[in-house]
Length: 210
Image 1 (cartoon, rainbow, N blue to C red):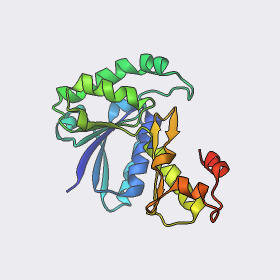
Image 2 (image 1 turned 30 degrees about the vertical axis):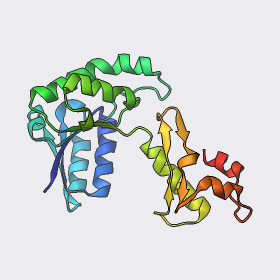
Image 3 (image 1 turned 90 degrees about the vertical axis):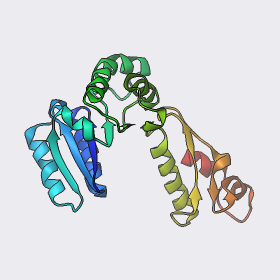
Image 4 (image 1 turned 120 degrees about the vertical axis):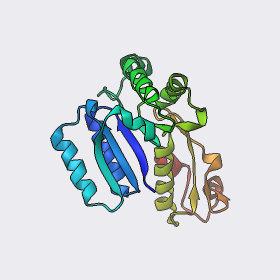
């Protein structure tokens, strides 16, 4: 059964997020709202790309779609400088963000919210307060992409299989922290490899990975 998702944000972010969904080809119906500013040409590009996939549909929708949506995926609602502070970002985004959440809830939304925004650690809180949904139904990506990247770099560095490494990056996307004490290759802690004379993995290579 296809999941029904709504992707919201500024036009460039919505386009990029929809394209990423198309590449993995999960069974989805992706709904794009007309007020996101996506041009008819770019919308048609996404619709055409979806037609080439087996499991995905892309369509333009009205806010009434929130009633049947399983997931609301929120990207950056405005184009902002990469180095914008959390305070300036929240000041710029919050009014539009609150309006979006209010529209979703007014139209009967009962699904989950996933935040792909900058400073998503702040906006998961705002989404919870504005929506009234359970905290467990609101998530951000946080440092998850950094964790995936660290695991892949460790796999290449140590020349092991894809599923042999477990590692974690905590903190925030802006201030990530690698938890080396919880990094493992199989059942062996990565830190034991640094201390071993039989491997070429040392503290300098750990710093390079960070």
